Image (tube, rainbow, N blue to C red):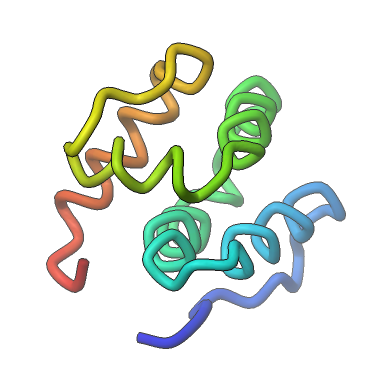
Length: 96
C-alpha cells in the first residue's frame, strides 16, 4: 500500500486536515501507521478523541516510531488511550 484508500469526501475540514497530515508525516513508516489508522477511524472519532489524536501527531516521528515499535516506552505526554488504540490497530493490521 502506498497511500490513503479513503476519500476525504464527506469529512469536515478538521478531519480532512488530520487525514492529510497522517499520510504526509515525513517517514514512510509513520505514514503507514498513522495513515492507516486515520483511514479506518477518522470519521468515527469524537471531538475529545480528535483532540488527543491531534496532540499525538504533533510529536516527531523519531519520538513516536520507537514507541510504536516497542523499542522504548512512549513519551509521557503522548502515552494514553489514543496511543494504545493506534498501537493496537497497528498490531492487528497484517500489512504492517
